[in-house]
Image (cartoon, rainbow, N blue to C red; front, side):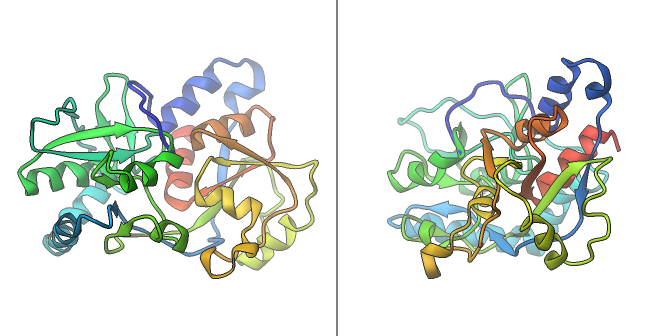
Length: 288
């Protein structure tokens, strides 16, 4: 996910603003999350295979904040009643000792940016703490998600912090830190859609999805696990997730919020996205 953007609003704000541009019933449309996990994944941070020292320091810092309660406190800001802390990115300067972080905003609640260019989100608050722990200035490079791993692999950035799921394909390009968050794919639908209301398990949801056709459209954020869940990757063997795919037309967007907006506007049927962003976007759009 990833190319530099100076002032992109947080994912949820994007949805609210875009929907506000419409009139009639669309402006009051609500959404809901089908609260059934369709997969099991782990998030970790990406570091160049040649930078063993940084990898060691990252794992050391993760262990520290998990042990002293800092990680839980950060998560509470986004899942509980806490208040997010805004993070300022310094200008890139090769003459200074800096930690250059590759991210992709619009993936709430892990990486967002406000209209003033200040960053926030679980990953980026961790990034600020890590930079301080290392005694370095923090530089955040916001890019398309597909570019995050490549930017780390090629040395453009020091570390990728973008809600990255650990996969064999990515592990061939970069090293991953210890896992810090367990994720899962979930489905977002319109609030008045009762298609999945009687589902109790992932198999129940999949059984319905399997009956869809190319006439149906499911949205996702480009380059994410949600996209792979739709297209499937059984042909990749052990290098993939083992997703069989959904027999629909995939609609990929730069941000999950844009996919949700498209669904609200009737352009697509459903959205597949990671559980935390799904619930955060739903909460923002529904106002509760």
